[in-house]
Amino acid sequence: MNRVIHFEIHADDPGRAARWYGDVFGWTTQEIPGLNYWTVSTGEGPGIDGGIVMRRGPKPENGAPVNAFVCTIGVESVDAMLARALAAGASEALPKFAVPGVGWQAYVHDPFGNIVGLHKQDASAA
View (spheres, rainbow, N blue to C red):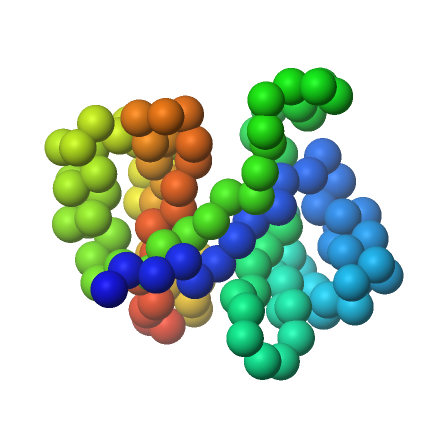
């Protein structure tokens, strides 16, 4: 079964957002050098961890339609799942790329306008 394994919070200033979520919720964050990305550990027990990433466009205005965290789904093959999603009407948001030492990642726009992440853990990714 492909399950949600990761969330991402988009922010204009990811470092500031990392500090805010740490202060408010007690989450632990760590920057991945060179990616402008912070990993997020939400704590022990049930739940998932995530990340904070640089926003790639303008901040949504107040009163705009729902703007949510991006969830990432763990898959056996990013290539195979990307092809399956595209065949089912998705469009590519970001092509497959390596997260060094972590794994492979890609993003799609589902047919309803949402962004969904696809991830395959692979410590040899570079």
